[in-house]
Length: 208
Image (cartoon, rainbow, N blue to C red; front, side, top):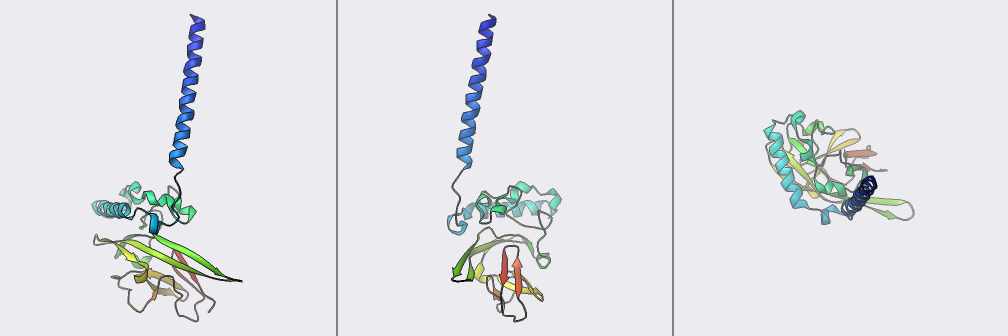
């Protein structure tokens, strides 16, 4: 009887180990999905827009109190395929708003509730021997304080000067926006401005 008990325990341990190894392999296969190279072309934009509208409804429900926000709602599956590897972190939200991961630019306050640059794709083309130029395609997702959620094409994103060498991306409908502003990805025509920043997703440099 004792011998039988020992054999039974050994068999049970072996079965458990086999199950664990099999489960681990299956989990690895399911988590190693091919990385989407360009979310503008390959991303699930419809799903993200649905989630953006749901997130807007949620933050309106909590009266924009970020301490009560369910942070899980601020991140979408496509974030796992962000072009910048560091942005694929599980702790990084897709929808950026004050009090949630980082502060939004001060000129957004009272106008923009949140935004996302997930669907901005950067391509850098090198011209031998040393020159190069970055080009951007895609759009931003903007959640307005009045509850609207929309896509803003990069062609309509303006650069508003906030300092002698700094610029901030602004969207049609904002107080600071005008049609004569430089566009996203362009170097503002300021001979005295060697460096400009649109925001966290774009750095503009010029040797002019």
